[in-house]
Image (cartoon, rainbow, N blue to C red; front, side, top):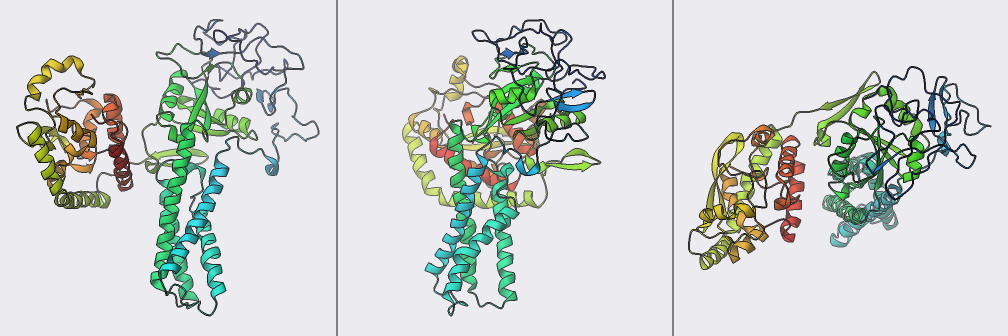
Length: 592
């Protein structure tokens, strides 16, 4: 990365090249005052920094990539006004683009940075959060009031302690208690934009707020010697927690529907080298539920090399940051990979975005790491990113193993009648064994036999050699969407995932878990490279791969998801995957 990788460009000369996509003109760029020069100590190009002739060092005057956009010749006329707040580096410090403060009547700070008043800053350009947060406040209040109504309508002793003052009870139950719930949720960060819309952190904070409310009500009842019905209080508190979680889950689903239509999302401008920006683009667009919509890339090396694949968004070079943000309508700037390495440049970028309403995020070169494993601790002004080791032992791991065997034992007993019905269907479809057993690789490379209901004809293995050319899978997977070896009942079992129920036997024996990586065939018993890491845990009946596309995933995506699960395992993560599995199975998504 260049030393000044995040600094604004110096003024190009009048013969700067114009680069535009085929069939359209280059976007007009904000002019630069001719008396603004780059500092003499800048040794390498920066974001949009140009060489003396206006072109990036090492780049030709014409870009061949039709998605790359540059700066055209400057028209110094008054009609080309500079975006307010656009900063430049000058030997004397930071000033606005024309070298003077934006407001001639406003005194300039000693640092040379024109700064808006704290009380009159612009709101964030991302507008989805405020309405969504207000909806959550209303639904949380209603949920707490609904829980009080449930307790009073179902329990006759709910008003004990307030029989002589029914008005006071109504005030506490339907006004003060719901307000206390909202305050507790706010205190625990349940309205923080960082936790809304995705992940489990939002609901963890709901649980913490519930514990706080239970402790607060217990303390007040003890302090004021109130003769309250314990059952009524428990119903009101537990009911409020359940109602809050249900309504928040409903609100999140509605938010995801809006984001699926391209609304209620962040418009993202990616800053960095082209390869790093494309990696971040791939990560943030894997799911639209994340609410990240990249709208452009601003390369930091002064040129855009030809990518190996098509660039999904326009690529810009030699552009002023604030002017580009205003032009493409971005509300968030993401600094990618090595572009965030220079602390001084990143700080100047934060200064440049002050007062614009644009959010600044940093995407480091650390991927597939879940939030609970990452902590930031500042040391002498330097934010250090701590990454904890995966927790594959301890009390949580013991609880997981115990629940696996308990659920497997209960499930086998309850599903025994269904097993009989499925066995009859298999026998009627094809004469042969009911169960199919295959050698798979388990934890630490241990070989075991996985149990499944047979869904193919008995000669399926012999016929496999004739179907190799029709294989739709890659890597170690052999998949055919309409496999002729699968009989009719077997096709229904696969679509409904009922063929995997006998794997509860493997879970009960300790060979598998309810949730984990997919159990792969042990054809050669060898796993090379990163794939070996998935052997740190027991394979599962379901997993992140199943709720993310199953057979529709490529081998690389399946391995990536398995490794993500291994590195970021937690009980809450397991419960989330089990919950998502229900919807995937009911929709038969990716099953064939």
